Image 1 (tube, rainbow, N blue to C red):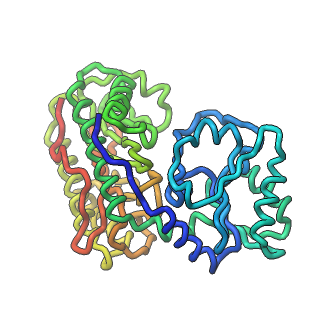
Image 2: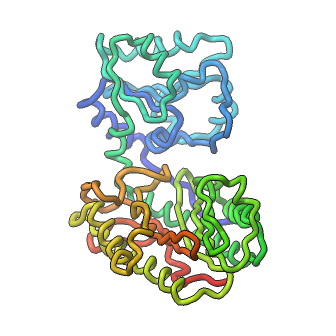
Image 3: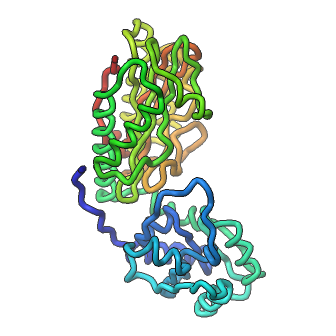
Length: 390
């Protein structure tokens, strides 16, 4: 079991700061159960179901805030009993429970009446707010004007505290340990699904809550088409030389998401494969060095890393942005890409994940989370800098 201490964040302080930001933009905000609410009030999330699990009144589940009043957390009885027996931040808001036979609209109307909203309120909604919630709110507040609560909250979420960075560091250590154990079990002829399941087992075995996104292998080689979507096909394929396994996975640890990647080659690679891997690693190093808080934009960071691969003659094979911010969601803004002129600030955390994807040939990728610092980026994982050959 991976040893870690649970986070203890100042949720009351986060709520106060959000209420101050809200005052200039909106009269009311609603945050459903999501990363937004987890960050703001310590209300933990569960892993999602593939199919929707519906029950009456679920549309009201979340936190209602105004700039001044004490927030109100509304839940259906079923969710309150089965999912929220243990959640942080309960001293920072009032909790109201909807009974199985109660009218959800009546409960929400009572909450809104207690806030003394203006006739045409400005209502900020989290991006995870469901359509049925918005429809109900339009009936309750027909003169309301809607805007994004998530955009307001990201003013706080984008800069990670040292405590948050430490949680990401712990998640990275767990992820890399799971990768080590999986590499030790790799054998020619394994099916892709066996590798995926081993990774996910190792993540949970070490105390992770589960994978932070769908565990992916992008397998490339002369006899292996790279599948990006149809896992029903790729999972059943065997992995035999020559093939490159491009890992893309991460763990959930106490609400934080890690994102990690390395390249493993089955069979002895030729010099071009080694050169491709060297270019990818050099590109990442350039991107990390360019992650200078207060000096460089997201676009400039992307360009610094991309130029290495372009000068090496593989520019067209680097087909995606350099990276994305990350924290309690896997993909957060801003993005390390052309056109994003956001100035880096200390405490921003990004993936740096260059790749060279070649059709019908062995390819390579790498990925780590890196913290923007005044003198350049600080990597949170640093193992396996050389090409791994099985």
